Length: 284
Image (cartoon, rainbow, N blue to C red):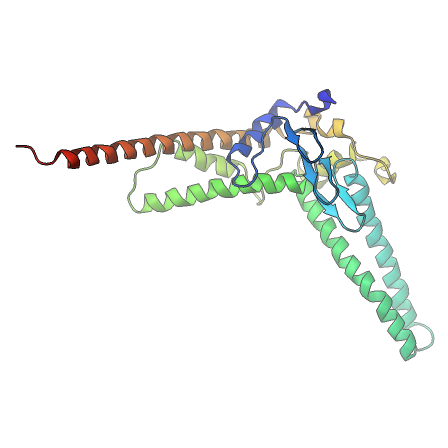
């Protein structure tokens, strides 16, 4: 629906950095998905595995066979936590069987090992996903795809900073607007590390509230309840300070590109002037 595509102004300003992505460009405007044949809002990503578009797409989960987005991220977190509880319970039962009662024969031990191997593998994968999801949400990123897009721009800005820093150490004059870029690079990073996300407040609980669609309460325990896109896009869930930091980076990159374009034009004019002087030759 058209009204669902309206993004808060702070988010639109932050998405302006997508014009300087080295990979696929992105931005606040509505694009068109040629795979699904419909208009695709800014925070929607197309999954080739599912052949469909998803709001706030995080990743394609092989365990459940579909994409994880804002509508089912809540269920995905509950699934990972439930899996850890189940694996813990099975581990306790298995250890009790090994330590208490009659000794096991070779066939029983082989069956226990065969049963434990896939369970331990699933435990390792699920706890890795749960840990990474908690880190992303605590930093303000409910979507891994969105995080990767902004990370690409941040790495580009840092490369510009490093390149001009090396030039300054060799005596080159500082470019106009370079200090704004340096300040913006600092603003988009949390003091404890990691890029500043656009959604949620401080900490993990605020990030979970974005994907769960409601403040912390006993209702978080209700299974199979979808997340809310409307609440995820509500201005109250948007980190205005983080969005302003990314918007300042977009302005700094725009200034840098404009200055570099002017310098290239001056260099071309100087080169053309030297060529014209060389063609004229020495005067009489």
